[in-house]
Image (cartoon, rainbow, N blue to C red):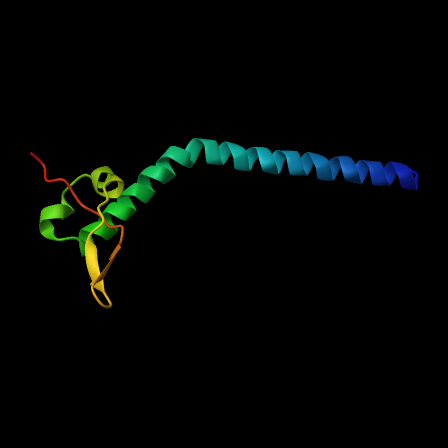
Amino acid sequence: MTLRQAMLRGALALGAFALVTAGSIALTRALTAERIATHQLAYQHRQLQEVLPETLANIPITDVLESTFTPSQRRGAGARKRYPGLVGKRPG
């Protein structure tokens, strides 16, 4: 086997390994993306339940995450600056 053949063989083996590895990563991601997203949403909901008042803790997470309001707060000499925040909708 010549040096050129050995280099070509090594390059092809490395390329095949890279394709198999990339394919397996892509397949794993495709199969688990929805499951991971569900777990992340549940985690966010558990975290919000710890800090929200009890009346807002049982509201569906999507309602809480997609709702905003801008309360006015006094700063300095009566100047008002608006800050984004969350507001929940009560069931019913």
